[in-house]
Image (cartoon, rainbow, N blue to C red):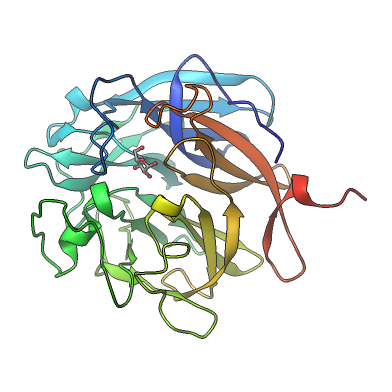
Length: 326
Ligand code: FUB
């Protein structure tokens, strides 16, 4: 696979959520920073404390860094770890969704509101009621209905909510060991995008036989980094497999799923984590992802990159560079 250049090199960036607003491409990434915290399975080394927004007129063209648009010290409920964000627009407002640990150390999802895609964003004083775990990804359907996908196992604490209520654990068991895999979650958002108006539902991933993906199937089970996009009337749920380092996707007929496993989008990259988004811009589709090449392999110092993707006749996703040139 051809190497790609980071979109920016003056700061470390990760977990890119891409959206097109007013004809421009905006990227909402995590802002990685240096730390002395040693790597662990809990992800303590991902100790980020603010967000920047980036925009561009063309893929491959100059990138504007809009600077700090939200910072930890301005969010009253947050203790630490501003992880992977996403953004959405509705009714002329812009919303930045973000996960962070609250004062008790429990990951929740917050939302901050702005008047422009590039922020700044003013945080709500409390996290979204009923939210938990990490990696929020919003999806606004053609009918205006909006949904929030979220969840992540291991350090993302999804396993702590397996009973429906938070059970603090010692992280000795990071995920289900047998039976069906833990699932990502989805809830419908209110018209003002700041609360849930449905119950939190499971995002069920099925295998080719129509059976739920199993916990032992680490090549295909959901780990973190949910993303939802629509192509040709179908709903594509994509995600990271974490410890096997793949980006995979599954296809469904509505935003709540179920989704049937359809394949891999990206093989492992340099660095432990893998996290992405997919968006259409100026008639082409792109995969936004990160690796740790800019830091020469430091897991928590990552850089955002972009690759073009295409869909085959069956709606399967392929990297454009892997396709024969015609
Ligand atoms: O950036 C911190 C965490 O690493 C994200 O929330 C995960 O998706 C992984 O990329």
